[in-house]
Image 1 (cartoon, rainbow, N blue to C red):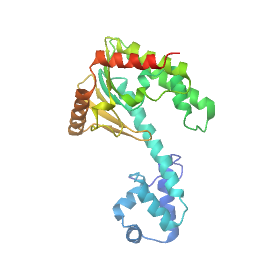
Image 2 (image 1 turned 180 degrees about the vertical axis):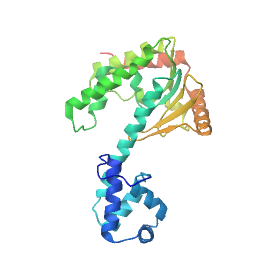
Image 3 (image 1 turned 135 degrees about the vertical axis):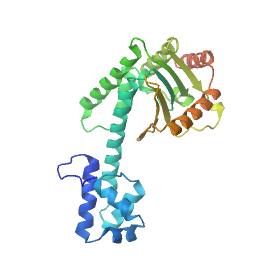
Image 4 (image 1 turned 90 degrees about the vertical axis):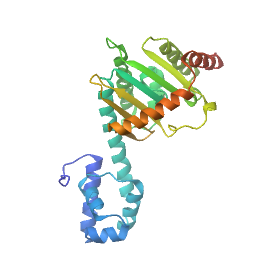
Length: 272
């Protein structure tokens, strides 16, 4: 990969340019920098070309070498978020084409969020663009739900961790409306919703949410999502392993009728 150009305005490109500039300014070779940080010189070169994004400990080590007061770590955070957004955009494009979706969710799935609840969630993180940026994101999230109304619609199975149903929004009406949306969705012939109760104990997917997609050509892929990270997986072996983890969680979840009863019970607990 070529060196990023000075016109590269992405956070990742800016980080790569700054890494190269700092090393050249210090007069260090890659070999010397490798000795100073204990990281392989080829790996460090890939950071300077933008080929690799690295991890936080690497940036902290380089901040220490260059005495940049955490600048590189801050740039890395921006680059990581930018990469997450790009991968999520790619995932959404594939999701819109999927004919079958299996999801395990540690947070309220965007496909089931009401507009008001989506606004609450998206407002919880500071936005440089203020209210206008929040509204743009709300519109994008609600618009994404159009895929549920395709003809024919995709077949969707969603397993909700109990914690999703136990963390209400501050506005009780918004929360009741959100619970009602979930209950209504459970009655759709193309949607299956299950609840994984806390009593099910530990399992292999506790680290975040998982989406499994099957495209019209039969190709399967997965998307692993944390609160600030996302990974698109298309290696057949890795997807198969993730599907096995999903199936094991599904075995622990309440059956659909019991799951609906569970959701309705939560709704009663939140009745006015």
